[in-house]
Length: 472
Image 1 (cartoon, rainbow, N blue to C red):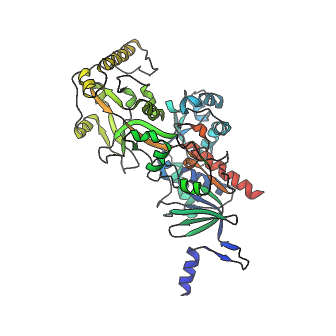
Image 2 (image 1 turned 90 degrees about the vertical axis):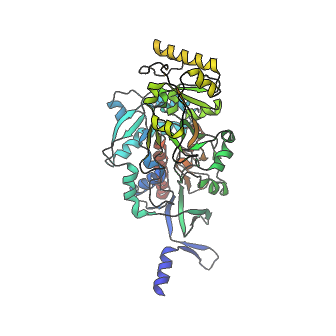
Image 3 (image 1 turned 135 degrees about the vertical axis):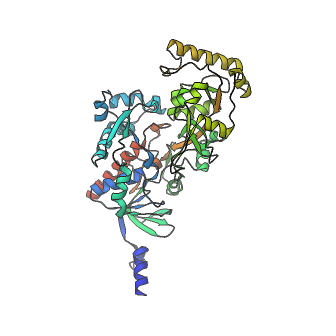
């Protein structure tokens, strides 16, 4: 019997009365972090550096979350850029911010941009390295996406090992409340207490209800998903119950760069990595945007404006195209050649562009004129929409192929309203990462490429604020 009582005491912390009707909570952790993805892990690592032991509650059996798949980090004015001869500055990035996110930066965004280089330097203090800096139309006019070196571990994998003694897995939180200045975190099989709570549960891109309520026009589409399975908005009801204001909920990261996964069906997506090489037309046969935008979150925003979009290929382009399943869905994501994709889906090969346009109900004359104008631009070395066509041949060799693109949700840039240090309106309650729309400000717009840096940034900021509070 004594063994059973001891076991229960160690595994079921509880509150007791001190005789004056004031509960005494035991044990009370300095910080409980709900969620062990990129933002939660970076918060925990920084807390340990500052001599504060966190407790991570993770609903999965391992730490890492979606961030373990992110290998390109947005950063400005870094040593790696300098080494590659890339000229950049926070001022340049701030000036361009509206162009690639759709929103004017505020002080919070400007601080993130200014500090982004220091976040990468912090990561490399753990003997992790970056191999190159790459351009991306979703990150501005100069290369700002820093690729992790394949010769070093992913920071989240390394940090997950270091945090193992401070994490409890398979802990699905069912309720969060605050009493007597103590937070009570209830899971399916336990109750925990803390002075501070950091919500790091990820976004809501896989929650059909929240997405539809936030962006009703998305229901005009057979929309798909390319987000980690945990991105279901766990924190939204807790934040609502605690009267924490939400913001930017309408700005969801949308892509139009893929098709329905031929193995799994709707709502899963397969992406077309070299889609920018194709010609993209809307239902009117017009070319609505520079195809390079399919690399960024703007592609989904364009689809909201233009409804159905079709990627057009001629035979040479089609032969070099392939389709890739999402890493979230497979141990080894499958890659299908264009020939395999056509065989599986029964895709039609059209001997003439006119036949393609007629079959897809595109405006025939406009389609032919659009393709002719595009080809003329390639021949003359200048594209009307600014696309890099330097290595592209004209679209003229039959047969022709058309793939209808599908709208997919990849990220959510809405969540709790927080300050620069991740603080909500409730003292001791913080929200970081995608639960705070990455930076807790509506000025992230529809998002940006390499936004994983923002998870590390806000997690680090939050840990430092908690440590400062303890030192006062």
